[in-house]
Length: 337
Ligand code: PHE
Image (cartoon, rainbow, N blue to C red; front, side, top):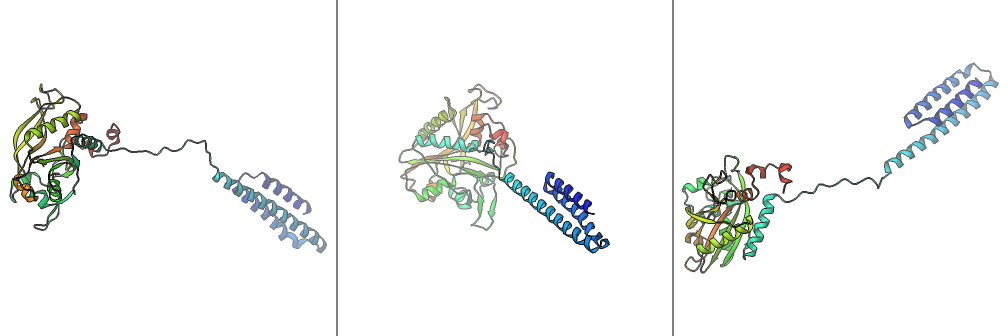
């Protein structure tokens, strides 16, 4: 029994010492503890003298193994800790992805700079508008079909207090004139909404840039000069402009403005449907009723207003053939800007 104890001790200490991790150390300890227990249980068969000697020895060995086990265990936990705290300063850092402004926004910033150069201020208005600012004040009669052409999303459907997602940036003309005294020289970039069947050139949500210039003697000639200069700077080339008669309730006379085709320079191609011209905005001379609704005396003041479909301008500038690319968040598209 004495020999057996010596054997257990030697083996246990050796195995504990060479154990590689905490798991195997625990197993080794359990195994030898079991062996020792069986020795203790066999002690009933010994004579009283033998019992004394073996008992003392067995207890000493049990203690030695336990101490060795505890020491080794401490060693492991210390090592684990230092491992988790170890920080390798030579590993290259993780790069944070930095986004950038959307191409529409970048182009709006560019447009703002050009108009600022011509003395215009930048003004904004709410996207959720009331019916009065969006239609009534702009001289749309209550049952006029033009309201239907600009069908949109109505949010609060109470008569006379209806809220809607604005169909154009023109209501900001009213808001600005009510709050400020003429003369005016502003542009209003912003998001607008319509109930559209979506396709390559129509979206339910798109952008416009509104313009308003009012003074004592402002004419269509001033309008043409401003728009020509803007086109020249934005598209970075010489352009021709032509006006065609059109209708808007809030301007009189009204016109559609065409620009000589950026693709074929006026010769005729598929982009301009062989006409040599691209329709780029709606405009006109501010209607007297609009001035009246905004607290401005139409006998003293006159001016022009225009509205650019901004997505189309950006599409023309960068030869983008589908408006939906602006809104589907595809990084393969957005990263090109
Ligand atoms: N608001 C008009 C539209 O969305 C454009 C426009 C603005 C026309 C200003 C004339 C004057 O179609």
